[in-house]
Length: 345
Ligand code: NAD
Image (tube, rainbow, N blue to C red; front, top):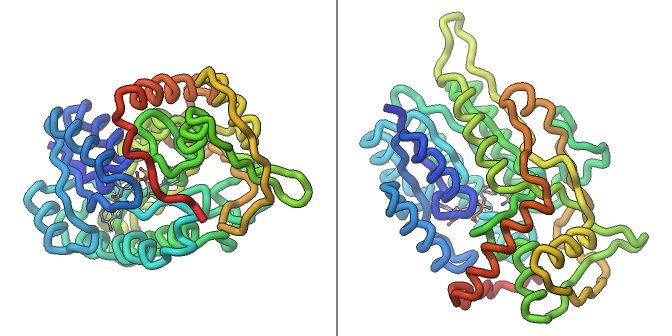
């Protein structure tokens, strides 16, 4: 039986992926250190929901190689969906060590245990649209040069891709990098703009919208969680096995954009969110701070369409309706009382 290890299973995307894989009747085990970047209660809630359907999440850090070894051997893991990371762009300004610990050292720690496993599992891992940095060629394609990360977070995601190439080259690990574009949806991350905008709109507080000196605003290619999950699972299904082939060649190292292909400015996004929530935002336009945000993101998904049959199905208006329905219910139940405390800069 196929066994999947999902790292970051208590996180937003990881909890969805673990559940979706479990529904396909493969064995799934999770790993997460339940870091305190946003309320642990939210992560514990996701873990207990996974436990209800029989998915166990081991509470451990990626750098705990003994625990990793135990999971890989005991569960005979065949595929790893690696989503654990210190996420967020702005948090890196004051907390660089967290990114180095989880995204760089943690990734190497995982890959070191992967190559000691027989047979070597295949690895599908989260990269990010942030690797495109200050790229001005739109839409972003996988073949674009990605040598100008605008944040420490982006630099660690690019480092992941470079490290993956190395482990693919030396050890023949089948590795697939998935560059996600701003993922949103129910049970999402409270540190992300769409969620804090919803909190501020509901509380009647100002919604800060940043503008550059020339009046332009950030634009993002928002992608609905279910589309991302489908893309991840398709990447697992189409990945080759790890290990050198009979002719001595390695399985390919693959990189795919998973986006929605319809970027919107933050102002337009706020209008759509107002509509979904049935509430009006108090907009507050401010000059753009230097916190590592890139001006825009826009995915070219033709490679994922071709190889993964990936096609985003949920447009932003519909996805925000789903988010708003969940958000308002969650808020009204009092579950959101432990609001996200971190205030970006
Ligand atoms: P998340 O923060 O909700 O999930 C990440 C999980 O990893 C958390 O539960 C955290 O506790 C865990 N974790 C962090 N460091 C760890 C460590 N050292 N050991 C074990 N567990 C650790 O974030 P998410 O939005 O679900 O993102 C999942 C992945 O996708 C991340 O790699 C993120 O960088 C990437 N990504 C997300 C987005 C997005 O818009 N959500 C966009 C691009 C890329």
